[in-house]
Amino acid sequence: MCGIAGWIDFTRDLRTERQTVEAMTATLSRRGPDASGVWLSPHAAIGHRRLSVLDLEGGRQPMEAARAPGRPPVVLTYSGEVYNYRALRGQLTSRGHTFTTESDTEVVLRAYLEWGAGFVDHLAGMYAFAVWDAEREELLLVRDRLGVKPLYYHPRPGGVLFASEPKALLANPLFRPRIQLEALPVLFNPRLLMPGETPLSDLHQVPPGHLVRVDRSGVHTTPYWRLVSGEHTDDEPTTAAHVRELLSGIVSEQMVADVPTCTLLSGGLDSSAVTALAAAEHPQLTSYSMDFEDGDTDFRPTPLRPERDAPYAHAAARHIGTEHIEVLLDPSRLADAVPAALAARDLPSLGQFDTSMYLLFARIRERFTVALSGEAADEVFGGYPWFFDRATVDRDTFPWLGNGPRLTDCLAPDVRARVRPEDDEHDRYATLLARTPRLDGETGLEARMREVLHLSLQGPLAYLLDRKDRMSMAVGLEVRVPFCDHRLLEYVWNVPWKMKTGDGREKSVLRAAVADLLPSSVLDRRKSAYPATFAPAHGARVRAELDALLSDPDSPLAGLLDAEAVRRLGAHSGPMMAVADTLHLLLPLIEVDRWMREYRVTVE
Image (cartoon, helix red, strand yellow):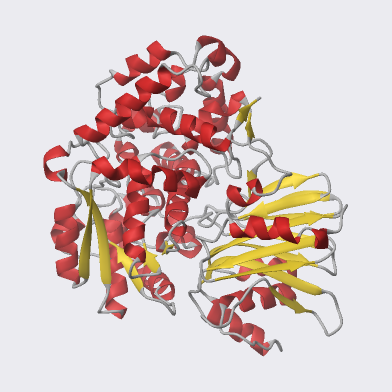
């Protein structure tokens, strides 16, 4: 895994901009602590920071090759892993290509030389990269199908700036951080972001499954992959067996590395399945879980977190036979990691959900460079509690929001009148709903659950993957996500909802697929989300920071919030399906305030 950055400009000679491009690239040193490189030409400046995972001695970047001797080069700066690179290497060798390294980077570069932009159809993995074709004077920005790896870009009149993270763009004086007032709803709730959207003005992400082409005519975005709905003809045993076959192969591919590899093991169905399959091939496997000190006394059950992970993680580890390490965090020290979490994101932090994950990953990185995670199984197989509340499912809005309070309820009346958050939310919902790949003749609950699952694969999944990427790469750890493999998703997408819940519970197909691998306590466990702390000290700190924010006339949010509305929401005590409590709901106000101050973000 690595960090990439670059600058295309058809109006100037970028060979004089080495210092700027090196500064952009240097900001990504935590993503790639092992090596760096810069490649310059008249209209393209390409940078790379490397985290060595495959072919530790080879695979240096930016990497270049030519269609023939004497012709202008094709240059690649690449972040990610293409898991089927060995098979692709065989195909390309049979077509006459020769290789000088053992890296997947060279396979991607040669695949472009062989198939042009169509090479993306041959890749299976998580990746974000840029290909500069000097002969065609064209840049391709490519992101994997589910958006596991990030790739940002800032269009310019003469070209584009691009990078793995916003910080690299901020190192170029041509980009400055600005937001429109209308961006407040997505600042407060990033799960509302549309594919490719960011809250910063003129900053975009390459949407998942898309490529962005930059040439002298401008910037052009094209999808190369979409989910397709079709009839599912396999019966339940055949479906479970095929899911097992797919998942086994995917985990096997993702365990390939030339560095130490471990797994994340919460004791839930998803991470336990990945760990069990990984351990089948690597018996000396190490697994990690996270909990808070005094979690047994502070914990409060909620619809999304009905029980603690610790007992189940230990039970799964004993059954599977891993060396299991539980990382215990002091809730009163979470604030110490706030600067690191903010610097990792360059966008508002997710509070304790970022800081605790950052601290967990930092501990893992002391011994390991690669970890496998169970994220995305709930979005793929249908695991969240709101999927099973018919009133929530039938409500004409995002299911994870339901009829609960919105943070935009705290906006000042004049700001609400301008931003119109209810209309904004409805427009986003309607747009994504219209993009659902529908199945002819499908009606009723089956049709609605296809919509609900499609909605969950958008903003909510991006929200989780962004957190995982930023917090892991901030410590130089590569986290792989087998449930985001597009081959698995394409198959499971068309499994009917009735079959996905065939045993009357969530993720029935996945449970059946791995039933022989796990203890019954783990196999039958209810969905429980990533841990949240309910420690009194943490709650007191959040309340104090909120009070300070509301009374500070110099806050960037001063005049934008209705202080009394914030306090009323803080006093709300009813259960909420998607958040731990009202303090967790209000936390983005603190994080947006901190981000705007730190990054000197202006509102327009």
